[in-house]
Length: 488
Ligand code: NDP
Image (cartoon, rainbow, N blue to C red; front, side, top):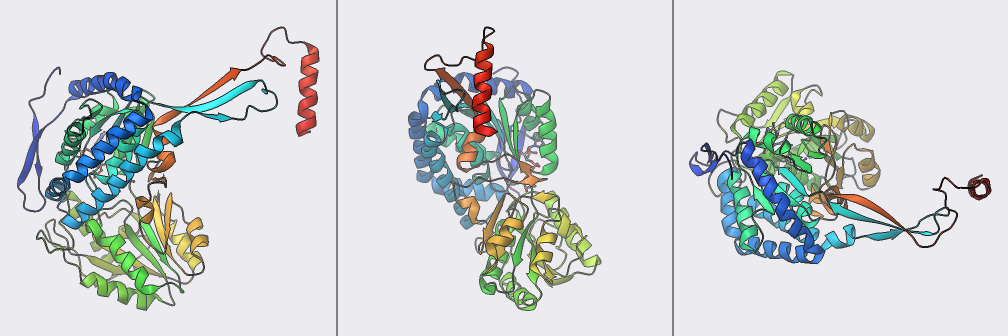
């Protein structure tokens, strides 16, 4: 490795401020060298074929399961989330890893397509070729589940991966790579470069063939701008401001339970978390009471019995405080909690009757707060839910109109009578529109995101050759006759 860095940074635990571990800050030269090694290693990885890669990825999956408690401990130490939440995200990530490993072949293998009337003499097929080296830039909120949605799918498609974990969760990234190597994988096929923002920026400029970014919309724009310099394709999974709609005929207990879990689990640091609820006026008061009752049962803390952990990123706590204060200043009611006190351990806040122009309604809060507003009709609910720049996901509780309302919501993923369930279905694509980004991870679309289609035609016998300078007027007339017959 050339120009080895001497800079390091500490990963601090939000639970008690202790240093979890110290990691190198990788500079541009080291990132380029990691990408170069990944490119060489990618050849062998690709030559394993779908079956060889499936076996390697399943071995990795088994290694993660075998060392589960260890990974849970690292996730908890670096993010502060309760052990149960850490376990759940790892379970979901394993399900995706297994799905990507076994479905890469049926989704990406070469298949015949009809050649059409004019090219009857051709055999036509399409297959998917891996890009080569994929750069993955991940966030800290689900440091296993979220990057795995890119890493597993990119590897299964036949790429090598260079992963830059968030500066708040470098230990999780390094752990995942060690596990991959322990399971027999090459450290160059799945490489990890630790560092701060500039290391991520360096990865965009290090000659990777595609970048998969998950993080904030603002950083997503910077990543896209950096990738534009070399026309490197990107997939952007950015933030959200997801809404849950509650119709007058909904199961209110189930809707309240879903709203509380969607809003407060992982201390609200979930891109597809519920930040707003629009509830029909006919059931509004009863629904709010049910949500308030469940919210009062929650407690944030660093101890093992706490239902919510502290916030992982200290500066996010200031955003949450500012959003709550702004909503209250505009006349909202705090049904549970109030503007959070200084520090990173934020107790849950339930706000009702919030001005639609408030930051708590329009901007991503990314903390343990929930806005519940009253609507006169479900049409109004859809309109208000769609009136933000984000379009990631959402949820609808309704007995009669679930599908109709879900299809009218703007966003890449909608759950009917549940929350966030789509993220746990590996066959479903995951991603958003608008400020939530573009491109898809997960599912068949997620596999295709990391491979480009390669079209082949093979001439079986000569017939009506159109691509010759010696083409005769008779052939032209014949083609015209066929086209008129078919499409006239
Ligand atoms: P950031 O945008 O701050 O960071 C994301 C990653 O980008 C980190 O690894 C970060 O490194 C890196 N980075 C920072 N600056 C640059 C740069 N100039 N060029 C390249 N990479 C850079 O997001 P957060 O980590 O704060 O994550 C929270 C956000 O992620 C929320 O908005 C959330 O909604 C979104 N998110 C979206 C998901 C989705 O699938 N749609 C899923 C999960 C989260 P470093 O940490 O070292 O600064």
